Image 1 (cartoon, helix red, strand yellow):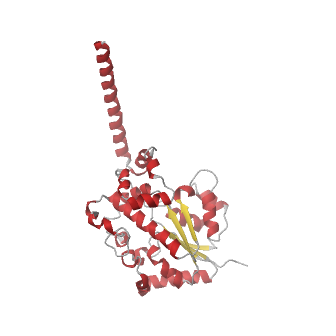
Image 2 (cartoon, rainbow, N blue to C red):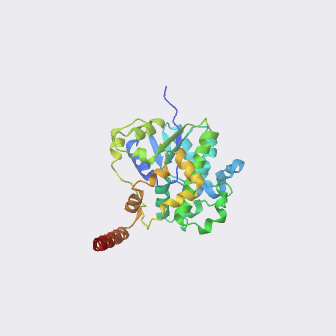
Image 3 (tube, rainbow, N blue to C red):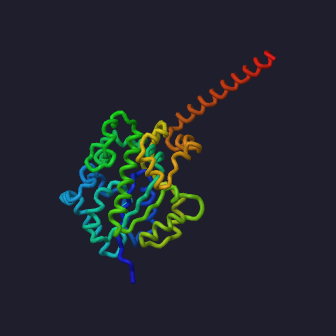
Length: 308
């Protein structure tokens, strides 16, 4: 007996390879699935509808949203899987479960909070004037958890605000898992999707969605898909320790932030997010400092020998 197809919605922050997920699944399953990324952008209105309760029904008053839900329903009725891999859909998920008759699954795609926040910050998500500005939640939004950050919001740097973003969306994903146990739920980490060796996490993901694992999908792990990559001067990553909810959630999701202090995280952050010119200047300053330290050490040694 064939399994009834579902619509799978990704609960994610963005900057977690969602573009790669969309392109790879679209290429691997051209006949079995309809795969989208951010099909209606900010029309889900996170600022208005996050944890809106009964008020969430008003989202269907938007013709764009209503037409989108109707398209998903037609896709399922045609026997195809629907996948929406972009980040903006999360506030609408309880409504989508209801409107699609429960034919829904959740995929929570997470990434290390420091790398996610640095990547989001490189896009200046809280200083945009496009559709992302409409979806960039803040502590003043009625549905958020971290309301205590409202008093310090204006003094927080972009990286810290993006840690807030990471925490809010991932807290909501875990909340939905607990409050809607009837909805199939799958947690996958970005780092596991691209880990060396066998693509175990990727295979588990597509099988959760009722799709076979294919050679086309296996080969896709070697491809990079990122149409929006930006680089800026990274912030002090250890500011994350100012936010206890973020640190606790990171640990729950398998990220040991304390251990990162003894790793090469600063070099990796610079390599990923710092422009080439800044990296070269930083290396030049470091080499200059090492030369000066070496000269000081030699002077100390010479003076010590003279004193003896």
